[in-house]
Image (cartoon, rainbow, N blue to C red; front, side, top):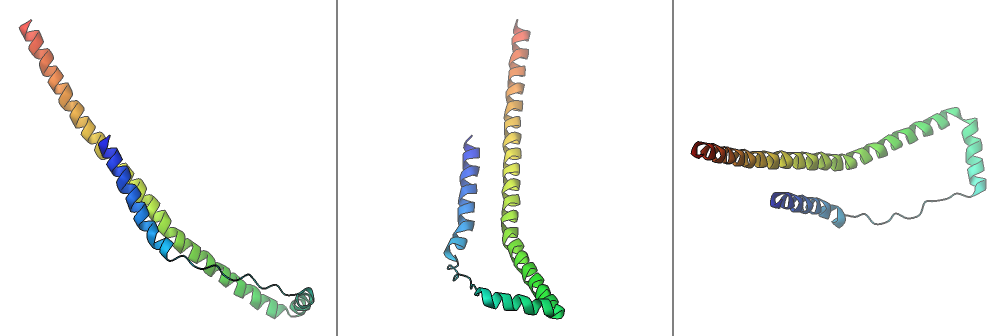
Length: 124
């Protein structure tokens, strides 16, 4: 039981240690987005409807920007996924080690009890 507590405390310390740099480098809030008035938007929509090439260029530009944003999200989350897998592996190895130690202890207890039973049957 002590070993499980020690593993839990070590795991909590490791998570806190990994989270501290994130808290220190938090980004300031961005300014509010720009909203064009309705007349300008209507004129822009009309021009986009007239020029299919310009519309396609803008769509391609937005697609690339979207993919760049999504890849940045993936790269950011990759760290968390790796930390999660690492935590799972640490817990699994800890569980296996604790189970192995318990099995050795129980094996020694069974051998001791078997020797005691053998001694009792020989005497009696």
